[in-house]
Length: 113
Image 1 (cartoon, one colour):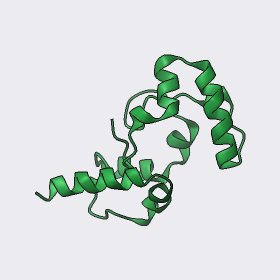
Image 2 (image 1 turned 90 degrees about the vertical axis):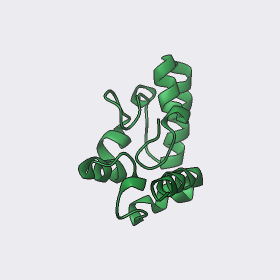
Image 3 (image 1 turned 120 degrees about the vertical axis):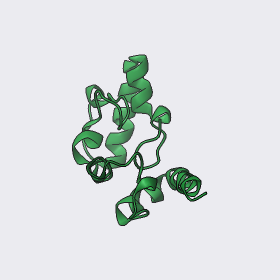
Image 4 (image 1 turned 180 degrees about the vertical axis):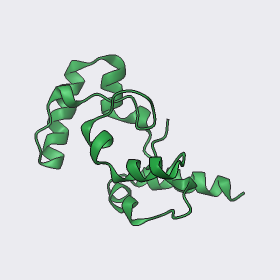
């Protein structure tokens, strides 16, 4: 399950905590993400079924993620399907998660074959 941005949702700790109803993992992720983002995040905020799935999302993914908003508006499966790929919306995610760029590049290359 690849997110619009190229991240593998199945690898995401919020997804794993939600799938396994793991409150200890939720607490761990909330603490880590709070420090990483310098904002308070509570364990009960750590619930996500994947950015493209029907169901609960983390607040960031649901309300703040500009990549998700853009891709959903353009009705693309991933950013690799967008005629503007790559765009500046992806810069930050590519810096923090280079595997997301590799995933999208691979998808884009498959389209061009």
